[in-house]
Image 1 (cartoon, rainbow, N blue to C red):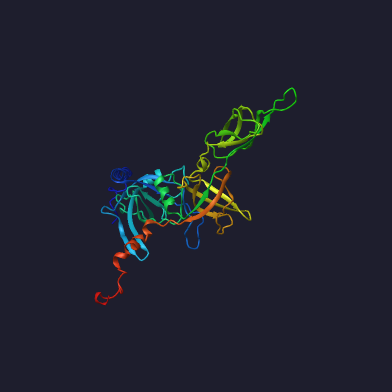
Image 2: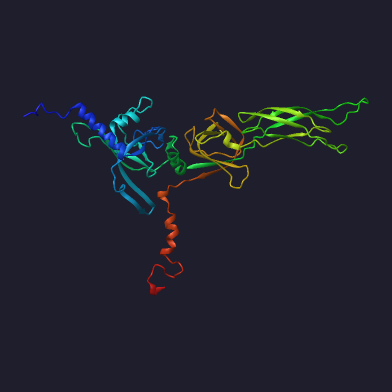
Length: 399
């Protein structure tokens, strides 16, 4: 016999009430997380994966963690390759809230459900989880409604993915875990100018010592955050002693010297002095920023690029700076390395030439995640074996 038509569980008002109660419970007992959709860059159609995936956006949303007594999974394992952390978690999200916060008209996400392979960042534990399976039928059709998604996730293992979310804690995963190249540079983009002298002529027609008459800017320099100081060096003669030094000021726009003004020509110059610019230069930071992409052109017109992760001053206190790069690759698809003695450009900022920013050193910085370190085993190995014994593997009486 068919069901009684006068009693129906599929009442829209009750279904909406059920969904609203679920949302309220998630907002009270849930945690704020960041949902990161995976952007496939170069999918392998045979294996179905993409080793160069990107995560360009993040979406803040509340989710409930079903694991009440800690994360599931095998936990911390000691293997022959080091320590492995195999935490697992189950996240619950409202369908309505997912559509409102993640699947919005102002982004490119066209799926109406969470997708396997996407990431969930949990600030509470500072951990990133990867979605392995999305269950859409639990709880099972209560009042004929399915208000939530359940996502079974495993701890994410970073393997060179590109994060551009703007969330500092998430970006740190890339900074600390990516394989990086370190370029050592010395910003030497100082300006340059030449001076001309005006020699007054006496009635007898014999020229005497003169003054600086004009200045000509020959090099605008680079990376200036403020106006440099201009000094006039030399210009004396054994027959004369220098008087007052000439003075001038410099104008800076966009990190470069755009003009110089002669304030005073000085006195008693017998020869043309040299013009020196000092100060006002902050180095790479004024023209290069974290997240920018730099490019170097190699022989054969091959361009190699990398994304800036951080810029560090040299610990020795000199003018050297080190640019850390990740996601390095060349436009011919082959392996290449950066070279010394050649300039780099910032293609993110319109291809500004890094004049005076010549690469002086190149090294690789191989980051190993904390879950793969074997330092503990190495440091404590001496506590297990006493190598001062003649036969540390034998019985005590056989020493």
